[in-house]
Length: 254
Image 1 (tube, rainbow, N blue to C red):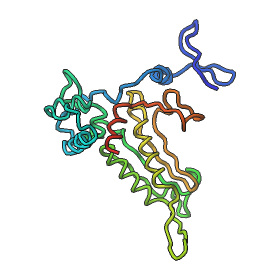
Image 2: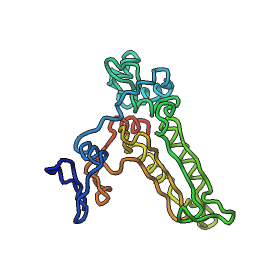
Image 3: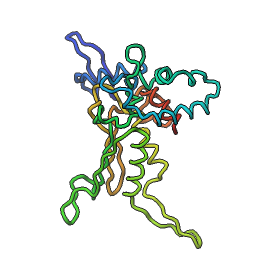
Image 4: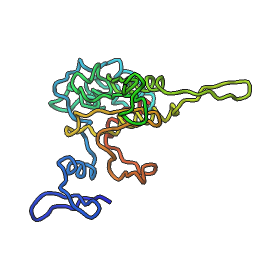
């Protein structure tokens, strides 16, 4: 087991691992403190971006879906700038008209202009390790990066990875159907979860989501690790949301 041991007399925080202690990194300390509350990094204002960097057609689709789901939500009929602020697509007070991180990632024309590493990459390896090579000496069969607003990234990644999967045929009576290497629904959910639950703090904003396909498995690595009370043992039962604002936007567009 590993758990923080707190401050020592000589200062610093330590992590207990097995029978030894080691100094916690700045990011481990930050992560431990963040997990005890509700982070709001997805509400950070992206100061270099402006309202024109938001695709208003995407915003209108989102607002129309909210109107359908919340017919009594009168605030959705207020002036556009007030709606954008109220939905946290843009900032408040002095930051009105400036997109938030969640707003830019969901509705930006090209979010990676301001947040270049908040994207996904996909590498398909030939074998079961990164070192195995094809008869022609190639280490991987495919290498792709996915950019754009989150809904577009998820659709693009899902479609591309489905195309890279091996497929088999199952005969059922007189019919034949293709069976994918991995279920499409599970693939999409895994990609969406990686985007929704990654750490968007400044500590790891320079890291991107990595999807790796080997001959025997598919791996998705999302910066930040598990959050809150979620562990590898209780991950199917426990729920803890790192990016509450972003999650609400994604769920409304699901």
